[in-house]
Length: 116
Length: 112
Image (cartoon, rainbow over all chains, first blue to last red; front, side, top):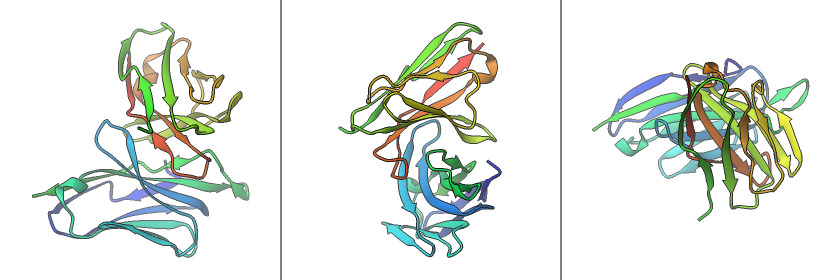
């Protein structure tokens, strides 16, 4: 979706390297969700962020939502081959001054390859 | 095990032949949703349901129907499938619209 831009589209890193994926919106985000998808399979929930400046971590993955609530980043420390997959951000965005509620918008995803 | 199931996982059909993709969740979730995923277009919402007998259109509802007669089931109906509905379909559920959505494994549909 062009309403929610993810960058980069694809990323190839060497095992052990750190990396960052970004998710940017032109509208205020009421909620931002990060998911991981193995190719052709279902999505696995990683984290949800709702407050400006919020940061959450799980194992080696950290996600942040900026103060303006229009951009989120996903950072992986010391990447491993198990981190490979497609990372998607999904958002509950502001529509006509209100939350979009149940109508989540997703980015196109970032394909991550981790070489051993 | 808490899960969202979809059937079938793979389906090849022909234009105009009505089909239904089933979705069931065992978590007593109020909220359920259908998405389609296409290369270059990402994940787009087709329909969603806030509770039994309550459904609403998402971003790409044309050519699809849904029903929510029971809390656990949310079938997706294609009355007259066309080749542009060839896609990977996902069903999702959550206990509340703003909480974590649990996704099914996906249904890969090909319409010839």
